[in-house]
Length: 395
Figure (cartoon, one colour):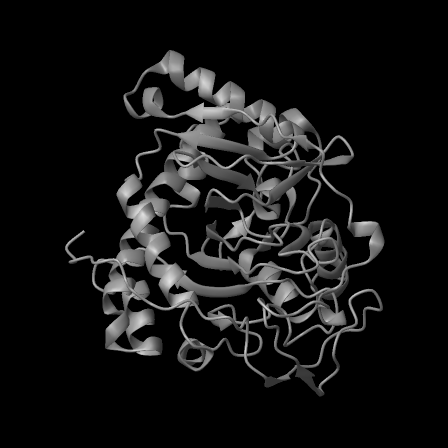
């Protein structure tokens, strides 16, 4: 990968985050989420190896704390035939994808073309980052109403309850021959010592972007529309890379690493380590997704649901935490270019009936989730109501 790699040797630290003041921005009122209205709230640190009672901000309602007792039987789609141009294998892969996306929006892919060594190196580098002292990680501290940077308590700048038990590092990616945006992010925010990490994740994002376009082609085939329809639509996509670190939690029955939600983006390509924790809601119950070291998990998001006129389901999922083990996952969120209009192909609308959603842009939905809403299982429905009332009052 044009970088010299040596596995970092960094001592494990025991603090989840350091004491700090988190200043929120004004938000619309929502009693369930206890939004913070323009005030500063003190966010207490969590000592992951010594805490016996977790702060109340991280405790979720009992109604959400339902255990998964089954394993999801999501299809594992082998992409080798697709990449070799085998039409029989491609049609079989499309059939599996269609069944999964019509039911719950989740499947896994193998023989996906992403080098397994690159995935391992990316995990090693991000694991080393999360083991750094908090003051070094905060060089890349996420600013309010921004998606990019480090966060030691995701959403704490906007909400004061149901916080996720995790740390995150998020950054933007888009293809550019002259501007390696990921490598520049690491170097500019964390310093020259992270130049190698930046190059690793630059390559990782490029590989994920290439894979995402192949999956978009399969999705087009599975829906019976022009096979290049979605691939061409996302050719100039601007995506989000989020690295998640879930520390051990002394009260795993009270907290979530990530609460129940559908991704508002189009497609999520996830690699999870072998600890496990991803769960999907299917047939009115939560089911766990078994980690596979050779596979990548694909989740359909709200924006792609709109692009299929509701034919494919946005995957409702969550991440649980572990009492004894830490967990890392790498999530690549595929988004359309901000000004592109989200609307399903015309022939799909003709077959499926009237359009279910107004035409909008990713910028519109992005604004909604950054300023007015916290992603959950009804983001797309509530966005539609907000959009029609505020953006298209005469719709």
